[in-house]
Amino acid sequence: MAQRYVRVQSQTGQLHYGLLRPDRSVQVLDAPPWLQGQPTAMELPPETYALLAPCAPSKVVAVGKNYPDHAAEMGTTTPPEPLLFIKPSTAVTATGSPIYYPSQTTQVDYEGELAVVIGDRCAHVPPEEARSKIWGYTIANDVTARDLQKRDGQWTRAKGFDSFCPLGPWIVRELGPDAKLQTFLNGQATPVQSASVEEMTYSPDFLVAYISEVMTLLPGDVILTGTPAGVGPLTVGDQVRVEIEGIGALDNSVALRL
Image (cartoon, rainbow, N blue to C red; front, side, top):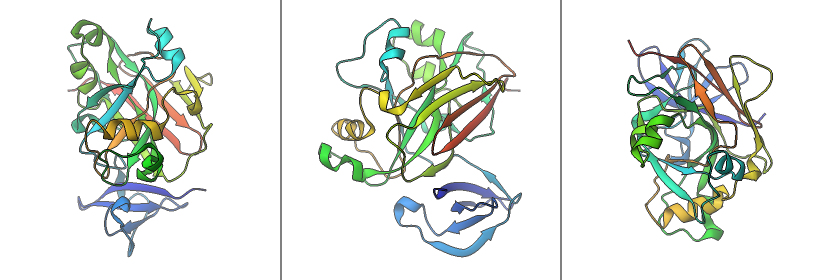
């Protein structure tokens, strides 16, 4: 099993980065792993911590229509260069946490995605060096208020609500080039999305280099690499799971904010 890097909150409220062991205990690191965090003698037993999103990015840079079949289902072709947008860091939430359905929208969609975690400061990175700037991989759900996306013309509101970027459950360092991405609703056996990550038009390496020519990426920042075909609506009470082979599963429910 690949090492799983987590971010947790202890029962005393302290935040820690750590290594998740097979028995679900966490060996605490003295810093984020992409900042050379080293194991300490501190260990958190199972049931003594809450699993958080595995990083706290300064920004989440997302890529639209990066799978040809998804571009087609949206009624367009693949963009001639990556279509970038930003999700605020306040949209990030953890596996097991609710996706809150905003009162301003009538259609909230799931979008299962592979997420890349940056390990080093990136500005004007040559394509041949981009892979070395990727620290690891996790799972994301680029939750979208589809009606607002269409109405607004630009995507900040539709993509930016609090809880609209579930991320996790942990980070792994390596991922197979043809890892399968699948999204499931309400425990059904048949996925609503299913694709290999190699089907994306612009690879993670290409995206790191491309985005670094636009903005500086900082350690711990996240790139969402796009969603395959099969996006669709969520309703209050739904359970959505995004699985990526070699990483694990990201689980969230949909709720109204009280």
